[in-house]
Image (tube, rainbow, N blue to C red):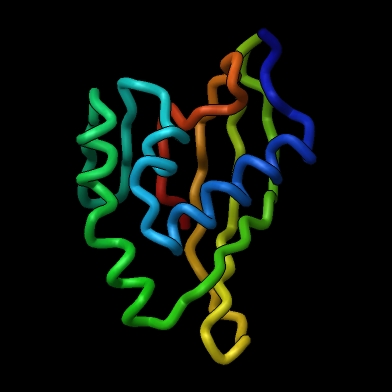
Length: 129
């Protein structure tokens, strides 16, 4: 299996991930992750080893998006770095669309992706500056 560095493949993956985020589709979110997985930020880190744990980590996200009236998410891929034959590090800046059609800036993340038979899967998420 070769690491996914194809922008069309990565864009498609992050498009599906963004739809799952803003719609609160927990099974679809879980399907975007390799297990075990890791999330790292400045003040916390956590790992998960089951799809239920992935879903649980996103339970509060959908209501937050709804409260902020965010209806769509777009990942602007800033950088793609092959790490190994199966791993790729992708830098993404998220941009959201609100219910009024206005662009809402999001946050930056780095995703360590593993290329699997079904396509890219997130192994680790790092919140970036």
